[in-house]
Image (cartoon, rainbow, N blue to C red; front, side):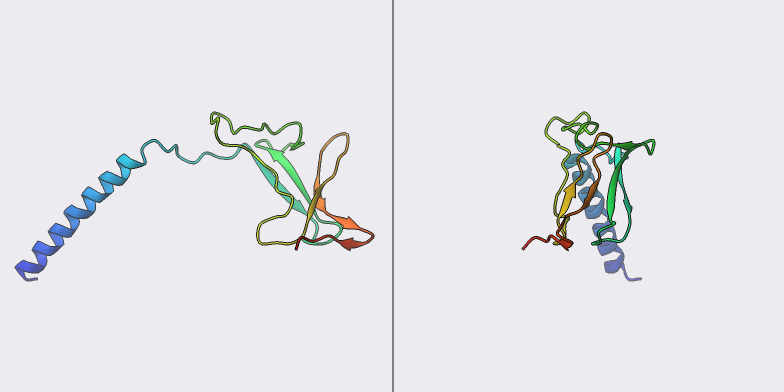
Length: 118
């Protein structure tokens, strides 16, 4: 390698190291991702009458999104949990089944026709 190329590589490495330090300083307040306390389990065929989404806690026990999942994310007052009725990249409308134990999210059906959003 010629001296100019080596000099360019050293300058580039120095610049990248400085940029990396600036990024670490700028984002040092962001907490590392933690495992979510709740997750979902899909059952049945998507967009069919038998499709269900169950909510479970970290131990795998079914929970009610209305009664067991808190509004705020733990330790963060400005971050909220929410349940979306129409999933992203889909027009299949989901309904929350109201029952005594678990509120299951299921495909919305009206007179054997699936509901969809515009």
